[in-house]
Every structure is written in structure tokens, then in C-alpha cells.
Length: 76
Image (tube, rainbow, N blue to C red; front, side):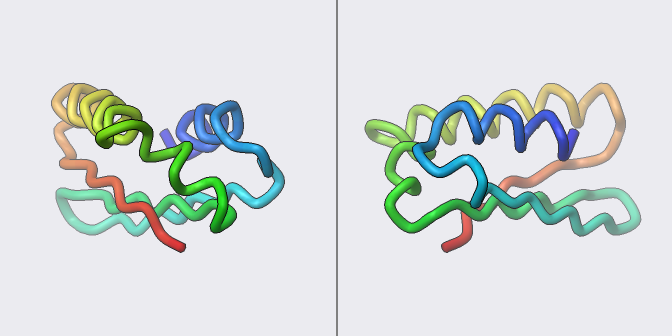
């Protein structure tokens, strides 16, 4: 999941080399922290949060199949 999220984010931003995803797995949940260049945060979030909301919806669907709750955070 981490690799797919990185690929999607790289396609959305101007500085794809600065995209990083950290995965913090716990017993029944996974926290994915997505870091991008400061100027690219707006592109990742999208108008009225639509892009990041779509990413979170996708993660929620994947998490239902895997049985582990996945959460996405955007970091500076």
C-alpha cells in the first residue's frame, strides 16, 4: 500500500523526488504519513480537500479488505 500511495502522490506534485511515505503499523491499524515539499501540499490536498478525501476513501476500502484500519496524515 505504501508504494502505491507514493506513486499516486508523485503524479500529483511538482517535486516528486521529495515525496515520502512513512508506515507505522500497530496491532490492528496502520498510520501512513505522507510528506511532500511545502509548495506541493495544496496540490495534494486539492480544492476543498477533494484529492486527499479521495485518497482516504481508497485507503478505507483497502483496509476493509485487509482487516486493518488505515489512516492517512499529511505532514510538512
